Image (cartoon, rainbow, N blue to C red; front, top):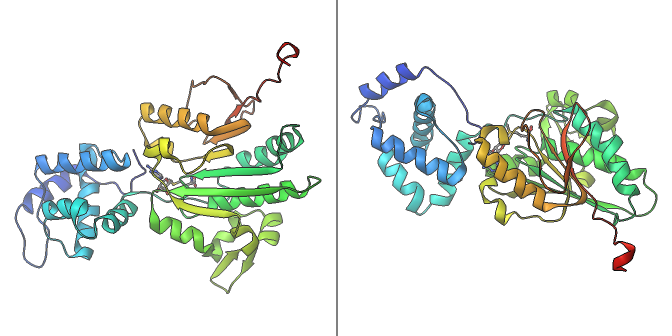
Length: 314
Ligand SMILES: C[S@@+](CC[C@H](N)C(=O)[O-])C[C@H]1O[C@@H](n2cnc3c(N)ncnc32)[C@H](O)[C@@H]1O
């Protein structure tokens, strides 16, 4: 399931739905019968992983009505059909998904994870004989970009202390186009600057005016934003990743889906690479060739280095 907005008293919403069982004056939108509700739930789950239990019926209806009013629809049925086959289906679908997903995020949201990258994993990675001089990181479910830029700051500073030439790039993906567009812009409300530790803020952000600040252009060029639905992990736009960072995304999916995703991530990791999840986001999971990182504050799995060829095989 995907992160979903809103909550509400379902019994109230149900009676409201019944009361609105026909087209009402003033452009009101009628209710939705059980069969159509099931079709909506099925469509959302199939295409996005969003799971809407019947207890969240009011959430779904409120958000659908909001978007339908903006787009000029008065019938759930017509909107349902147009969303799949109409001339603007793809654009409308992206707009609706954005409505239904939560993009709440922060810079340096889970500080111990960033500390682990900078102080433990990166020094070991760059010291490994097998290291090829570059780091490719993936921020999965990046929302409006704060997570990807936090990673960029930590990696840029960390690589600055490594002798010789090095390079890094970050792929930042999300299912929401508007969230990605905000991330690409790299401009944030000035109140959010306090989320960034001072030593990074001084170096990587600049005030634009008294309302906003911008991420340093050099850092922005290291982050590529791209739309990607986690349900399509088999067609991920990345491979051979050094660092997969996925926090506060999987919690919205059922456990079986999470396990499929973890296995997909594991297959994309390079030897010596690491995947970092949010604390508590998965329990009792293991995968061949991965070891749980021993850090009590961080939930991370490292792919073991490929075994060196034995003398017998040389
Ligand atoms: C709560 S935010 C977390 C943002 C960031 N990772 C963090 O920890 O601050 C969850 C993000 O996951 C995205 N998301 C939800 N379902 C997704 C899916 N099936 N594929 C890709 N992204 C998804 C949402 O659009 C949203 O931006």
